[in-house]
Length: 258
Ligand SMILES: Nc1ncnc2c1ncn2[C@@H]1O[C@H](COP(=O)(O)OP(=O)(O)OP(=O)(O)O)[C@@H](O)[C@H]1O
Ligand SMILES: [Mg+2]
Image (cartoon, rainbow, N blue to C red; front, top):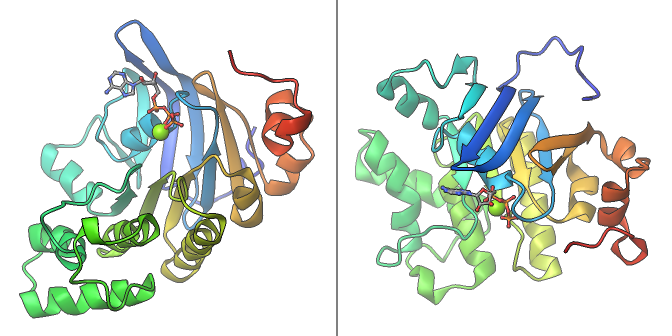
């Protein structure tokens, strides 16, 4: 299914026959795929198909019902709580909705992972906070509270928090939803730049096919708990699958959700 199955690279994420159910509801159904180091891997699919659940399985927030989730070579079901905590520090997560604490400033929110996980002195932590604020274009916004900034600024602050520990894997859950097209483009460009400069593998969940086609290494389309196709932007553009054509050209689509 994937275009680089023969790649010699050791994957940073590998799902093998992953099943995830909630009660009687089957969300992931024998899901198998890999993500390579430094890859920009985009996950697209209709609402409620398990995209956020997939990211939560990678970050260890959820456990598979059966099958294996490997992250940076480790089987998440076989690691101790301490090993899981150490692995999770190598993963940056930009949650759907941002998840900033309202009673802390942006700078304090962004500092949190380092305050919790490191013994660096406060001055060094805030030096690093200033560096990442600059990287996301929020140089002078560190002292503002989440309620005082726009949605686009909040996304960028969540972005800064996700990269502050220099993670090897970055997970983005709908980073551009609810933003105007210019801000969405800015966030896409930021993801692309961080992917290039930090060499972190980025797994991006989005509904934005146009953005995905512009910057993804590979795009995976999730349907009914499994990837229908995993391919390069060119392979996706050339796909004749009705679901893919519906995302590429919704106005000409025969696929209508009930
Ligand atoms: N903790 C949970 N307990 C029970 N059901 C859950 C839980 N998390 C997710 N689900 C269910 O799993 C399904 C997939 O959810 P998920 O959040 O992954 O969808 P999604 O593809 O991210 O959708 P969207 O594009 O709307 O964000 C949904 O039916 C959801 O209700
Ligand atoms: Mg979701």
